[in-house]
Image (cartoon, rainbow, N blue to C red; front, side, top):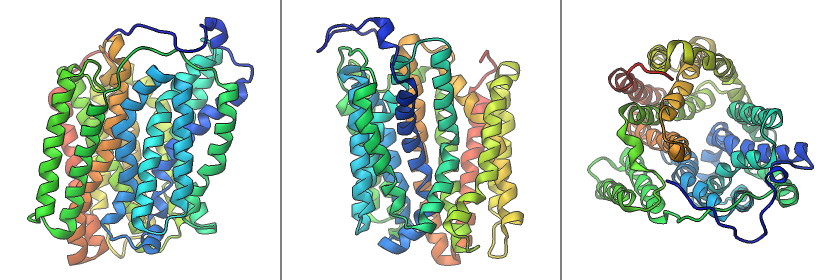
Length: 471
């Protein structure tokens, strides 16, 4: 959908000057620092979860809200944050988001109760949703097209790729050597420096006339929260519980309202026409299912490593490095494979590898060691995941109209975050009863069995909906 550019505030800047910065190194450092905080925040908490559970008295199932609160707010409001940057200015939204994220991190570090921490995590997710969409756009504004911008994009991409691994190790270091609270406090000095430098060295983007689809954002976020709450409550109260049923009913109604809103909205956050293409719709579903499996894998393996094998938080974070390293290597190889063999074939190879890893995880027991029970399936998971995520992205963007490219890629990011939260809630709903009846290892086995089903459904979706075509 075309938009008419309007000028709001300062007179127009020369196009060349807007794309140059007097402090390229500092400008890139500020943008990358934002991206690193946002990416790290999803993984840095995982290895701290057992300590958080003990400190704030979370239940075994309620603990998943520490990551879900962030993922739902971040994923659900990501597209609204991107649209707000278009209308109000990318630098302005970048600064606003970082300010909220930093304040929420500070308050979260002082959490005295589970509710306090979850409120802070939700606010962090809102801040990330405002800041993250603007970070990439600010590279285009502040760096001249060509080698200068390509170098900046290379650093940005490398930071994103390495963020998960850095987060696991950093979370372990901070939790071991200081306290889990420093997993949150560490954002404060970084955020303060970004807030000081951003208005001084980053150029603002032009603003565009448009409307914020607040109704769409509210209905999709509240609908997903209701569904996630229903699954997690079912783990403790049962599937016949009145509140559980009410949560599911409310979630369905709210998501139905979201579809109705998007159908009528002049500028919807998710144009429903994106789902008219079967391959693209299938790829969104694949991302949702794979994010569900991956978030669940991190959550439950951290529990197993620390509570069964007795790993420290740092050792647990380091334990993921072989998988993360393989993911990083495959992320460099896969771009050369996509044009040669096509996205569909890579998915049909990568998904079975992930399924093998998930099935292997279902064999974990109290007698399993790291080398015999965890490392092998991690490597299968990392190899498979490294083969599938880029093909999914390529299929989503193939044939998309230029005016829909931002919405298409943003919807993919949203699907990843929301899928991770929803999938973890589903896994927790089966983990809770199994945990009570057979202990932690039995609960983990059952959760990974359901996670395997997610991957197998993704394999079926790929076979049925992703037909061979140019990447």
